[in-house]
Structures are given as C-alpha cells and as structure tokens.
Amino acid sequence: MAKPVVAVVGRPNVGKSTIFNRIIGDRLSIVEDKPGITRDRIYGQAEWRDIPFHIIDTGGIEISDEYILKSIRAQAELAIEEADVIVFMVDGKAGITPSDSEVAELLFKSRKPVVLAVNKVDNIKRMDDIYEFYSLGFGDPIAISGAHGLGIGDLLDAVVEHFPEITDDEYDEDVIRVAIIGRPNVGKSSMVNALLGEDRVIVSDQAGTTRDAVDTPFERDGQRYVIIDTAGMRKRGKVYENVEKYSVLRAMKAIERADVVLVVINGEEGIIEQDKHIAGFAHEAGKAAIFVVNKWDVVEKDDKTLHQFSQKIRDHFLFMTYAPILFVSAKTGQRLHKLLPLVNEVAEQHSLRIPTHVLNDVVADAVAINPPPRDKGRRLKINYATQIGVKPPTFVFFVNSPELMHFSYERYLENKIRAAFQFSGTPIRLWMRRKS
Ligand code: GDP
Ligand code: GDP
Image (cartoon, rainbow, N blue to C red):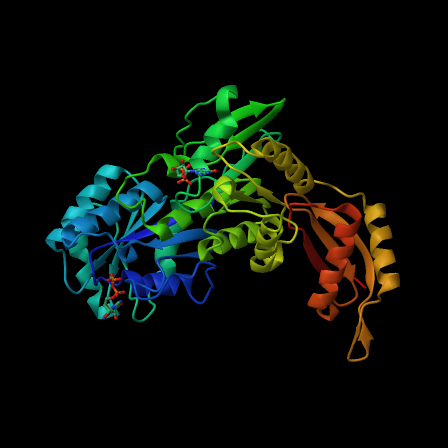
C-alpha cells in the first residue's frame, strides 16, 4: 500500500525546513541526501496517529533557475503533481506577500487539499496575526511556531484528515505487481518494452484519482502481471524529472504498491549509492526482490566477470542474500526470457505458507542442534512458533522472555528456516512474543 504524500510549499524563509525537520523528528530516513545542496534532506517519512506518510520539503528541491518566483512556482507544481495533501506555509510576521498570492492561486486551481499553516506565531499574543490569511481562501489558517514547536499537532491533525481512503483492492490477489526500479538510464523502459514485446495483451492507462501513476497490466502464459507506476519513465523532460532525489521518492511509492521489486543495476557502471537505498527500502517494506544487472551486452567479460559482479552485489547488499541475481540485456534480449519465470518464483515464495507442525519440527531441530545462549543465568525458551502472515512471510515465536533473544540467534533461526523452506527472493520476519 502506498503511503500518502504530504508536500510543504511556500516562499523561501517562511520556515518550511524548520517545520519539516520537526515533523520527521529524529526518525532516520533511509535516504540520506547529499549535503551541501540546499537542505540536508528534502523528504522523509513520518507518522501521525499511527498513519505513516511521506513528506517533501519542496523548498529543498533545486530547480535550475535564477528567478526565485519561477522556482517557487515549479516547486508548487511538483507538490500539486505528487502530493495527496499540500501544506501551504506563510509567515505570520511578514503578512501576505505577492509571492504568497501567486502560490495560492496555483494551489487553488489544482483542487488538491490544502492546509494553510501560518508560521512564526511564537506566542499567543500574536494570534491576531493570522486573520488576514483567511483572505487566501483556504479556510481556517493554523497557527504554528516552528521555532517553539507550537501547533504542529493541530497542523498534522488537519493534514491527516485529508488523506485519501486507503484501498488495497486495485488488483486481484492473483495479479503479480512488479516495480522496475533503478536510476535514470539503466534501461527500465527498454526492459518493459522487451517484456511486453508483441505479446502486449492488455495495455491500458489507468489514471488513479489520487495519484497519476500509469500502471501497465499484461498477461503471459496464463499469469497476470501489472508493472507499477511506470509514469516516471514516461514523463521524462519535465522540469523536476532530473532531480535525482525526487525520483527516489517516486521509486519508493512504486515499491510500496508492488509485490516484486526488480532492482535494476547498470552492469556497465556498477553499483551506486542510490541502488542501495532502493534495495534497502524494498527490504524494509517486506517486498520480494530480484537484482537485474542490465546492459550485460556491453560489459567486457571473461569467465570470471559474472561471478565477480555477483560477489560485488552480495558485498554491497549484505542484508539481501535471499535476492536472486539475473544478468540481462534489454537491448539484445539476452536471458530476458528468464525474468518472468523468476518473478513468478519469488512471488510464490513471498506468499508461501508453512504449516505450523512442519515449522515447529524445524525449530525444534534447530534448538536441539544449537540451544539458545544463556544471558545472566537465564535461557531463552521457545515454546512454539507459527506463521501469522505472508507478503512477506512473518513468523511469531512464543518465548519465555523476548528480551533474551539475541540478534545472532534470530539470524540462526532465520537461516534454519531458509534452509528448510528456501523463501528465495523474499525477506522473512521473525517476531518474539512473551508466553510462559
Ligand atoms: P524555509 O526557507 O521556508 O525552509 O525556512 P527555514 O525553515 O529555513 O526558516 C527561515 C528562518 O525562519 C530561519 O531563520 C528560522 O530560524 C526562522 N523560523 C522558522 N520557524 C520560525 C518560527 O516559528 N518563529 C520564528 N520567529 N522564526 C522561525
Ligand atoms: P531508463 O531511463 O531506465 O528507462 O532507460 P532506457 O530504457 O530509456 O535506456 C537508456 C539507454 O540505455 C537507451 O539508450 C537504451 O537504448 C540503452 N539500453 C537499455 N538497455 C540496454 C542494454 O541492455 N544494453 C545496451 N547496450 N544499452 C541499453
């Protein structure tokens, strides 16, 4: 399920980045932006009232244009395009300026939900400052102070109220949702075209109501698939398409909606930081994954090259040893016929269910061979285990004291489970619950 996206818009210096940082708090975003651009970070993830969402600080998006007004406009357009809810921020001390009015007009025309935040209302005496902002036409302005952390809860309450209804019934259960992810130019579009080829059965543009993703459904050998959110590949040329960070956000949204993530790596250039972020995100989101090394046709090879490249992938993605690696050429079609069968396989493993008694046999064997270590004179005791979910496969272990479980022992159990049932291509999750 894709998380809603909130964008913060407003002219420079109203306090967007201050508020953004307050909202994401200390939560570590897995995507660390390069320092020294305009901001440390332009998007992050946050949660309010148990609802997780993405947030973009549009002020941090660099748009190569020296005119401030033009770039504010481009940032607002980006927000309109991408966000489910827009926080329009103004400065309570400064009052309404012409650029505020300009942004207001754009936002107003977009018909997207807008929450108006008046920042720098640092104390109650300044509450009168907010009244003039009613004239912007976005209803009740919400007084906040980024400097003092006031009103942020009210602001988020108003934002969350506008989130779209969560629906996860876009596609039938038996449709495999595939996200093809990688930085610009790795060959994603070529791969899609090669996959669809002449067999392109159904291709329809489904414009969503809350997002403008374009999904591509197709069928092969009786299996239905949908390629998620290829809009990013098609809308090239727009002003912000080259903003690398921005395309990572788009990738994250596609990953959230997918079952299987194809992490496309450029065989010619090797692994880059962004590949790691994307793969890490797929892992954390519990998606099945395949490393697809493309442009293998132009790589100079000897009999060791493939093995060396595989090893490099394993070294860079230590946490994803489960993901298979496929070397292809979208251009020549080399090994491309192996891709969909591999997708089928990992999708199947992603939703595999293990009967409880079989699982417990494996766990009992594992414990007999290598008993849990003692900690301060106490030993972890596993009473039983059961699988509580799929996509990804999730197991609950009922134990005497969850705090006695060590990371290394959990790793050991995961390895034993994998040795018995494989789960290739999918992360699995182990949860500990107290039960004496
Ligand atoms: P942005 O350009 O819109 O992202 O604005 P910044 O977050 O960089 O803030 C611009 C300036 O306003 C900084 O000097 C902040 O310290 C200041 N500022 C931010 N929030 C508040 C606030 O609530 N009250 C006051 N008095 N100053 C603030
Ligand atoms: P995208 O930005 O990831 O969608 O990449 P494209 O599919 O547009 O491909 C970018 C460029 O790489 C184009 O010029 C393609 O022709 C080229 N390309 C894509 N796949 C391959 C491949 O397997 N081998 C070679 N040599 N070139 C490729």
